[in-house]
Image (cartoon, rainbow, N blue to C red):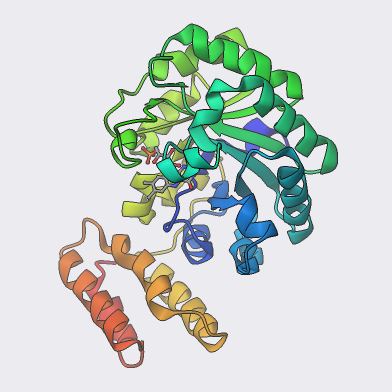
Amino acid sequence: MSFASTHKVCIAPMMQYTDMHDRYLLRLISKRVFLYTEMVTTGAILYGKCFHQLEYNQEEHPVSVQLGGSEIKDLVESAKISENYGYDEINLNVGCPSDRVQKGRFGACLMLEPNHVADCLSAMKNNVSIPVSIKCRLGVDHHDTYEFLYNFVEIVKESGVNDFIIHSRNGILKGLSPRQNRNIPPLKYDYVYKLKEDFPDLNIVINGGIKNINECKTHLTKVDGVMIGRAAYENPFLIKDIDSEIYGLEPVLKSKKAILNQYLDYVEEKLEQGYELSKMMKHLFGLSRGDKYAKTFRIKILEVMKKESLKGHRQDLEDLLFY
Ligand SMILES: Cc1cc2nc3c(=O)[nH]c(=O)nc-3n(C[C@H](O)[C@H](O)[C@H](O)COP(=O)(O)O)c2cc1C
């Protein structure tokens, strides 16, 4: 299947949010959205003790692992390990503006080094057989013109990597926190549309501020795919009509109650394997979004997290959901 047919709607990589449990929940709601892990640094993979960072559930496919790093050797090694884990794609993070990431010389600051990014990508691409993609910004700091983005992409595509996910904002490396960097720099969708016009052979996924399926449809008239981040986390049920409305599949007829029950079955199974209850339950906060008893549902989840036990609460939770 082509990139454009598999990546029409993607879920953004989000640290602390899109962990394996959240991705499992999202996969219960949509069979087709393309999932991304949180960023995993090459340091964590190669030198950390946390091998579980690459762990995922088989049900999550298609799923891409997002790597953070800039040492070619480390990226290649991490890409190979990720391929062995069975991921469907490797994505390189060239969009994160945090101080910690800049100190490691990776993330958004790499937009100032397009030749090095191209070298990283081509080395990874040459050493794995799964696709390699990049997620970047429009530019960084005062480098905010369309020409800067055009030049970056023109150099990077020489790596042979054709799949670009673009967060449609500039990254500000000094003076704005990562959170502010997701809200303050203005969205410039027109840059991303123009990029697709100028590089019709590249696969372009647009990201930033996309809130619903209608907006996805509008963007899809201009680019190959859309990526949704916060809106899908805050309201996971948002993605329920994507399979039918975007991919033309039979509608998923599951209710929120059914999703909740399937997810809680998963939680119980994972509890037995030693996973932490609160890390799994927190992803349910958004499921009641828009419902009459949304607040009570969230309070109940907090109670379960505090008691560190689901016992006796499943029915209460189900009853608090609208349908
Ligand atoms: C809590 C949080 C963590 C994030 N972590 C990552 C990350 O690990 N890698 C990455 O490329 N982007 C990360 N992002 C940025 C998102 O992938 C996305 O580009 C951004 O939120 C804009 O999309 P949205 O407006 O649909 O949320 C993160 C965003 C949030 C809110």
